[in-house]
Image (cartoon, rainbow, N blue to C red; front, side, top):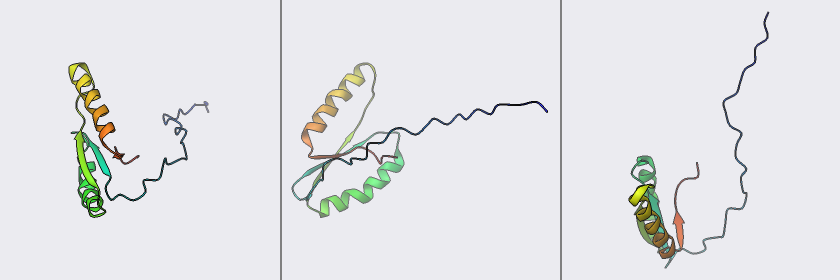
Length: 97
């Protein structure tokens, strides 16, 4: 019988930084930024649940929808992202999955 080699197309998992970052502390009075885009509808459903909970804790919530990442749209998105990051105390930019 002939010998065959089976190739595994799965990439190895990335190195993970176990540090979750700084503690948010109390949310009251903080500005929480929610970053969205037009391609991830299920994330919008998650934020529909999270946003009222953040507001109930006293946070002000702002949403930002990311735009194009190339050409003139990319420059605009980059500029908006910098402004978004500067204007929030905490940014939720995804689920980390």
